[in-house]
Image (cartoon, rainbow, N blue to C red; front, side, top):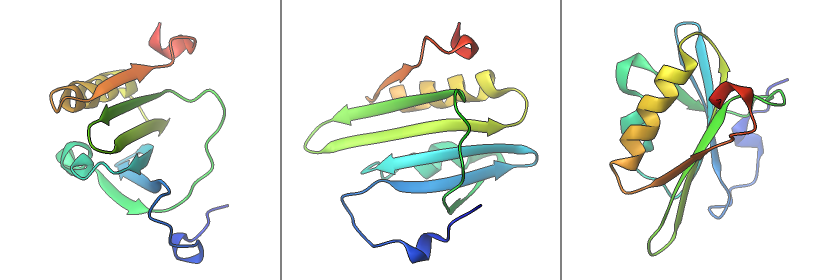
Length: 112
């Protein structure tokens, strides 16, 4: 069941949650103080809307952060579709070029 983001309290200290799709591919993006993330994710016809969606356990994900003047954090979870590893590695590379430090869950067989 999806929850309408407009029904949630407006608290700027909380993460923003975005649901992004491209054809039959789906990802969930959780963002805190990362302003340019859409330039990276929405390339190649990805479309994102602020929306909460259910995330099954053990889905492939990565996080990137930058600890400049404020904590900047983005976590991306792959929900559905092919070529997940290729696409996610491309995004990781793009965020690392912006001086972010990215990590993956090495205990998840997806990343091994």
